[in-house]
Image 1 (tube, rainbow, N blue to C red):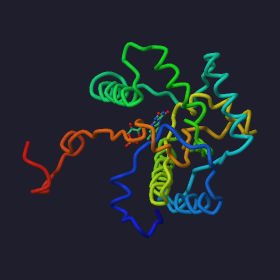
Image 2: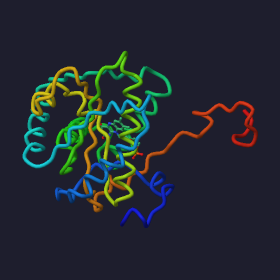
Image 3: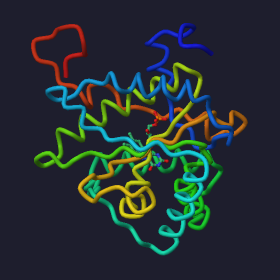
Amino acid sequence: MTPTTVTALDVLRTRSSARRFLPTPLPADDIRAVLEDAQRAPSNSNTQPWVVHLVSGATRDTLAERLSAAFDGGETTPDFTGDYGGGRYLRRSHDHSAAVYGSMGIERSDHHGRQRAVRRNLDFYGAPHTALLFMPMLGDGVRAAGDVGMYAQNFLLSLTARGYRGIPQTMIGHYADTVRDVLDIPADLKLLFAISFGRADETEPTNDLVMDRVPLHESVTVHDTPGVLPAP
Ligand SMILES: Cc1cc2nc3c(=O)[nH]c(=O)nc-3n(C[C@H](O)[C@H](O)[C@H](O)COP(=O)(O)O)c2cc1C
């Protein structure tokens, strides 16, 4: 697939996360093109606060080993907290877990199976490349984090347009000190998440998973915009 054979709408409707990759590295020119596409992301006052470390090869393998060891030792060092609270967000997160583990053939009661699946995050799901997305703490960090999210979506859509797959991984962000140590990154750069990427193993059913979305009216309230959503 080349970028010219698919439309932007195809790309944004068909992008999905992959969780089994082939180990073959991507051509350097394609990776550079993805980085250039991502760089076009909008940001507050064009501050472009994303600081990206691209990791492949021996460094990727070392990082995966160190992350797996930190996981096994329970040594989490996240820069940011995550809490879905209760209610709808927690419920959606549980639905998501059931769908992801189900796509891997892991039963809800199979605690060890789930742990093994979670641990595969730390090997980047087998991807040959991972991009670690850091940011400086500007104020409370929320605006910069939003900008990095814009960057990440450009990155993922560019991968899709070029026939590749990726997955954002907050799991990697749970081991921020380990990543900084391996890559020699200063403590004032905070790790949001990684995007691991490459060619998906298309024989793996988990890569066919299409996650549901809630209906529009659960996310959007319209004001004086008739015809967009049914009246409540
Ligand atoms: C910022 C961010 C962090 C994520 N972290 C993880 C992760 O650590 N591990 C994982 O398997 N999936 C992770 N995901 C993938 C989500 O589960 C996925 O995007 C969501 O279920 C929707 O599915 P889709 O990407 O296939 O459309 C993350 C997604 C985002 C946007």
